[in-house]
Length: 491
Image (tube, rainbow, N blue to C red):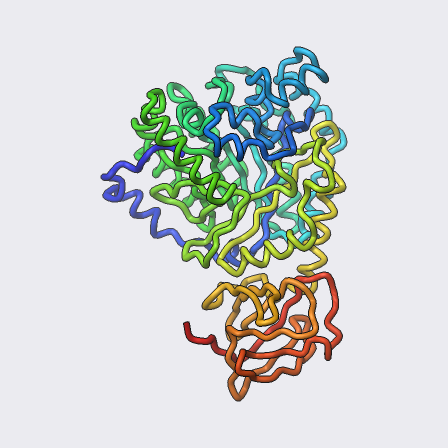
């Protein structure tokens, strides 16, 4: 979210070396990860459930982010006196300062069982877990030795990061850390309403060294398999690239996301009206186009991270969609049944992402008062685990086919994945007949359910046709077929 890349960046030898890093196979094979947002804001656990911020951004309202549906932005929303969060806070907590929620959050740790969380994530089919170790409120979930000069002691006494990392790895999963490098409201507490406010609020002064010290501490203590930064990075590229080089030296098969746009002097122009207008117009265009967030690509990253939105086509660069199960990442007590993903939408969107070279990093937002994962979220993790149990072969360790897919001749959604000589067709729902216009048979073509049973097929002028009813194919889709020795239609 910081400004444009300095033109000489590509001549930096350290940056050139970073660009030779390859995304490791473990990440590309994983397909499903779990994000965990669990901050002091999950104690009040409130945000407006209607996605008012999108409409406000589209209209150019300079207060838009104060109406965010993200509960982890609670402290920022409090700074807008007429926001839903501020009204809720006054009615529920009076004039209680946000920082007092930290003690309640820590008290809730008495009920926390990190091993049970890790078993739940593994049962869902996840292969990696990324924990928010410090969000924008600046509160650290580990007993850091790096003192916060603005709010002393603003960290957890218990090593939540270490305990969850140990539990996750015991289940055979990879463990990663999220760190908010671009925002820290203990250093810069201006109200953030527009995207230009966010860029202007990237702290300077002592903060870049503070953030770098945190990052080095996280790397040294926890050896995270994923280093996931948010918003931007507060120092110039000449300081950031050596830091990422240190990370790969410690974790050679690590993964770095795309929200590391290094600070440059153009970010300071956000104090002026003309520059602010350019940024805010761009944010409005993106909101009008896809109602999600696609971060600008920095000079270096391993993977892209669109937020609450998927790419429409196969992407050459690996990516992961990051999203909550409802409208928020942090726990929102105001979310009702209609605010959560349905089973079909969750599973079909997951298949769609995988077909386009993407992963799903699905968020879990535990309650702050008792450290429990809400039932609505557990149910969706169970949906994923149950579906992957039968369809794992069509998802795990696959790569995109020659095209992602569209619909069958009969109008059912279809997405393709591939591994070695197999092509998998994932259909959106069960049906009696499926004709795949993208597939051309050969003399040795074979077709089966992904679970193993052979399926009769015929070659037609419209494509490869399967009589699914003949094998008793039932269920609340998506469902998958495996094909061997097929080719793609031209065009």
